[in-house]
Image (cartoon, rainbow, N blue to C red):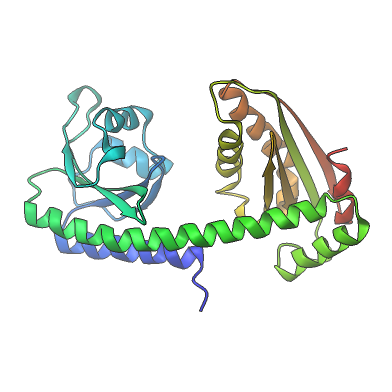
Length: 275
């Protein structure tokens, strides 16, 4: 049976809830970029920075710098991160989450008299969490490959390929016959030599589409450019998507150009975008 990304997230939440109930402590999982993946309700020990992360779904940059300063991204064993009174940061127990030699993130406990036995229980949970996150990565990569193939077909100059792309989108329930479709393209024309352009493009697309548009925004990232397709209701915010992509790449000191193909109910017209 296929195991969807949403099912993987449910599995993570169940592990977190069980651990929190057993420890009677709040538990949070961040990915390696500091984005909140799962958390449970609080037990009263949280600080303002933990609450901020839950509201915004990612860690305050000051917290990320504090973590980096203590080297947690190279940890292979649990450890303690000291408090920082200046930013009202309470001490944390940090357990790295790894599987197949990949760091997926960290499990955090507010360190108010956390015992060694409780840390051992948290570490045991990270083994399960790592397995779930590895499976989730594999599913994400498979979905991304399918999305890239779809986008390449849509922007192909071959009309027959475009028709097959539209049919595939309908088969995958991304598109129905009456849905409009549009496309956004952003191209880096003068890259910042200190940055990895492809990494920045992937990050810009991921951050722009992950919350509101993921299910209706397949993308294709190739040398120096990204194409994002928008279907149905997502076409209404094509300008916003383009603006966000440009802003994120400008923040990395790249010079970019962007274009968008206005929404059509004939998705084959998307092939004209790159020209």
